[in-house]
Length: 170
Length: 170
Image (cartoon, rainbow over all chains, first blue to last red; front, side, top):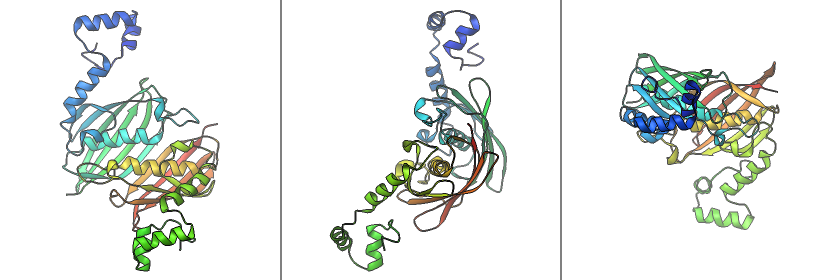
């Protein structure tokens, strides 16, 4: 199961197989499979070196798949630090930052600037969620890169979508 | 001059009057006028209590004018911490956060969520700049609040504009 999708949590595996979390942890240990956080980190480190447009610290979320010039996937774990105090909903600019930095990471150019973004928040985002963003390069024309981003929460509901245009500046 | 626009820096006043910064500082001291940072902070503290939709720590930038339901102005000082390492240009999500939080602050409703944002970056933003954002409520219909935001840099060049729609959720 983890070979196909390395991003199941121990909780999800435990629910899926109807066994305790302890059992899952022991089995992972026996099979030498690190915990989710470690698995994500490892994949993200492998991908970060592919990014041309950004420094590694400028990416919000962890890039778990990246095919520069084509598509990318990143994960962001939301925390209560990110929320509006009045509603306990994650603030817009954290999600925007995940989307924008992933969109920029997939662009195949040495240096770009974000020119336009049209975004839509579809469902409110709660803390302790896992946001999975997918960015796709739609077209490149006249040194403009058009990138679409969709973000789902861990229940596979779409929470955000955005269209970005990046301009090459050199 | 500072009565009309409290946001001139000592450097600007010194250039304007053709005197040294020392002279400006001594004159301010004599007239009991605090330095720019203190003036901004004081005005911002007075305004923060008017905001209905946000907690005070959730506002990016300092709100120096606020007429809830109508318009607001905020200032954000950019730093080198905010930039992309490759271009030394301020990252998009900092500017987005200033614009979005100011737009949300002017909305006259107890609780709202940002639904849609259409934004445009017009000129690259450098560190050590002073961004002046102006948000205006354009219309309110069916519990939707339409807010436009424009941001200028300290040379009065427009760097950003955005249109936001906020939805009342209670």
